[in-house]
Image (cartoon, rainbow, N blue to C red; front, top):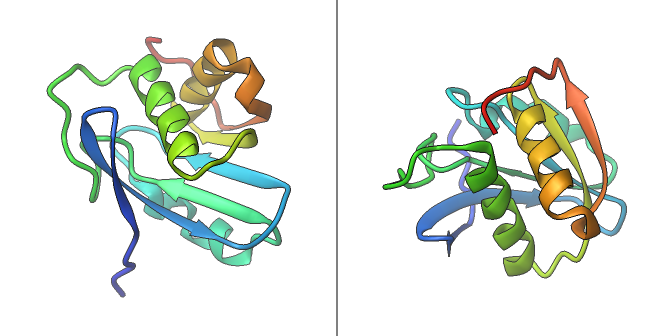
Length: 126
């Protein structure tokens, strides 16, 4: 089954994302490097709130980056995705190293995050 996701040119690359559900609260799901946003397929299908999943640069349907992949670069991609979707603030959920990306986002953009959820979180190089 192929899932078609919208795309946007953000922070120098094309990022694919899916937005499902309505209203608030809202959650942005962050997968770890190597895996794709497909990691959150079940969660986005059963979520009772507005959920957004996206493929980080160089993964699945998002364009590869000319820059080294770092937690801070992906955190900036998330901020720009939120700007593109006109989202002022949201909760973020990170899986494995995705949790380190969420932590970086919370540290660099605290006014844009309502909170963070770490699922099996491990820290990476931020």
